[in-house]
Length: 398
Image 1: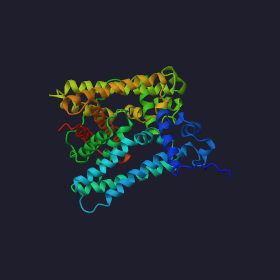
Image 2 (image 1 turned 135 degrees about the vertical axis):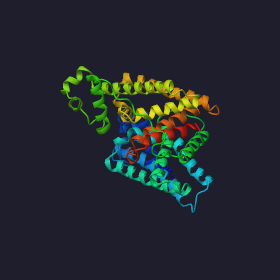
Image 3 (image 1 turned 90 degrees about the horizontal axis):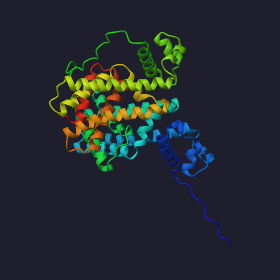
Image 4 (image 1 turned 180 degrees about the vertical axis):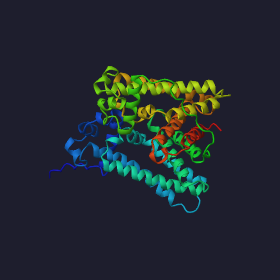
């Protein structure tokens, strides 16, 4: 008798396996830098086989991000089954679950942050609605622990807590997974127990108004930054920028060679504003020690972030739109700025090593960046003072 060759079995979870392969490629190369054939080759299948599971590349990205929401929702539902006031151990268990998922699948948060705009409208709406509903449930849970909190304050703290876990997507610094998760949990607990300032307490000073009329180049940068912030980079033309600045579209090219060149200049101006504001805070604030210096940096960062829109544009625009020659320079400037915070935090909290201090600094900056762009909380009149308070809590400045 002839023996028949055993048939190969398809993995039961083939769809999620393919999505996992795609998520790594998306993060390494960017959404536009990956094709269907690239995903198929990395997964060891053919292009047609991939289409049996997904209609297109956009559907694969949707599967990746929605699976991440599924995991967060499952952890939240388990926590909401608790009756009465949750114990500190139960709260820590929930946060540890969320932190562990963030560390083990940090590419999910990175993809939502940098590539989520490429989703179809239905998937974008689904993720936004489910995230908001989940945060509302977190806020209810937090109010059971802190009944003195108003609902909107509890929601603000929960959004900040989510940013702590999402901060793993903005850097590549890593430590042992268990220690990484523990560090994120400790930070999140400080955030959730933050005493928010009352209206009028410790206001963040506003940036001074310019003494002279800005140059035409400065006007173009300001107009472009505002348009990129409100419409998105790809939806804005050089003609739009010229009109906003009061000149003809072709005249913009006298100052900038391209829209990407304009974006690079916006990034450099944002970096200059941060550096100058930080220097000014450290010179005039007369900090007594490293903790005082960090508070001054936190105030200067929030002041810059809540001022002109250049910094928000730098954080929200897809990196592929920046000229290759500008990317490395801007990345170096950003790393130098973070290193300034990190060295001060290492001195202020010697129990942290350099990598732990850097992870903590990124968590603080990410909270400020995210909450300033989150519509549900960005309109709070006390947000600048609240951000400074939250950053101080993350850094554990006392």
